[in-house]
Image (cartoon, rainbow, N blue to C red):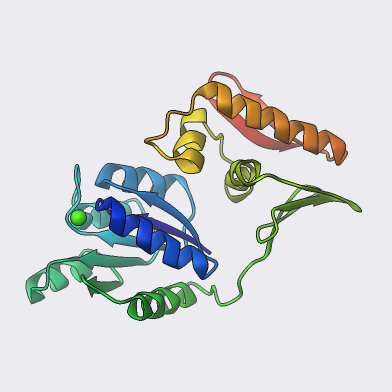
Amino acid sequence: MNILLVEDELSLARAVKRILEQQGYLVDAVHDGLSAVDYATGFDYDLIILDVMLPKLDGFEVVRILRKDNVNTPVLMLTARTTVRDKVNGLNRGADDYMTKPFDTEELLARVGALTRRTGGTVVVDTVSFGDLTLDVKSACLSCGGNDVQLSKKEFEVLKLFFYNPTMTITKEMMINKVWGAESDVSDNNVEVYISFLRKKLRYLKSKVSLKNIQKLGYRLEVEA
Ligand code: CA
């Protein structure tokens, strides 16, 4: 279950991310409205938790743009505002639920649970497959045929990006943002190192799947015919 969390108060974002991850959700956190639109249109999420007061674009605008782009992921608005007018505003623009800050953990989890169930997500998926590969998202174990190999945390996060977006070319910038965070000082070289680690493991597994270079753009998963 993938959740996009959009919250510009970094300490709150970290706390909410931790709470959700403890429940087994996979969480990407971004901190402004433009990044929210980029991530929500570029990747598949089961739920978007969206603050209203955000830099660059506010939460209402984000929802409006997403709905216009036919991104129908459920949206839980999170805000310090408590007026009825804001609530009506948010729901009119396509938000699915609304929660005012401060909120408690139980309430957050109850609402997240209700909204992710609505998309048919009661079954928590433990594995994701591509070609002859199966990735266990709980243990970070990658298997092919009868063989398996343990991935490191970063290798797992990089590969997961490809598995969840199997038709997409993933750029180095996306990988850095999603795996290390936009504020990190990780360079393209680090990404290349992890791609080479993963390629080594794919060869070890004798998989027909490869991480193909897409010239100047990034990488994409491909299955050898
Ligand atoms: Ca805010």
